[in-house]
Image 1 (spheres, helix red, strand yellow):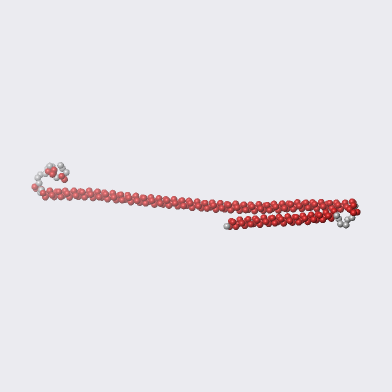
Image 2 (cartoon, rainbow, N blue to C red):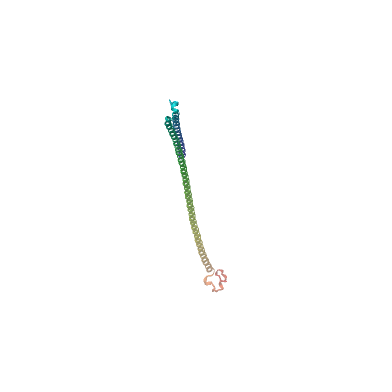
Length: 232
């Protein structure tokens, strides 16, 4: 809105300046025309005065010796008046040309100022666009960095959780292996204890059936009837 108001004000000032220059040019032209008409009227009066002088008679007009100086003076006056009129016309023409040149320079200056304002406005718009693009790029880069950091954090957390899970699995495996070892150890010990109990029960039952004093002498063939001895 401020730029639009400045443009409107600049256009209005330029229009007023052109209007003032046109009024000034017309006023000077009218003044020059008035002066020219007054000069032409004065020249006409002088011409009428010297060509038809008042109170002259036929004897004075026919008198060549008396009329010669007056005719020379009249011719000189007419020539001077004509040269003055031409000079004033030339001066008026030069003045009008100067006024037109000044108006042209004013218009050119105004057009240049408007063009510079427009160029400055375009530069500002381009600068604003560049600033906005830079800001958007910075925000995009920040979002990319944040996304990468979040992805890295997620990956680190996943790796940490995986490490913990693997350690927990390894601990469970070790515990299970220890339980299995302990179970195997207890089983072996239990089997050994059962074997000892069986041997004790077997020896007790034998001593009950055959007391030692009634037992026949033992030989390698005597144990053939007892399978738990392992002999055949």
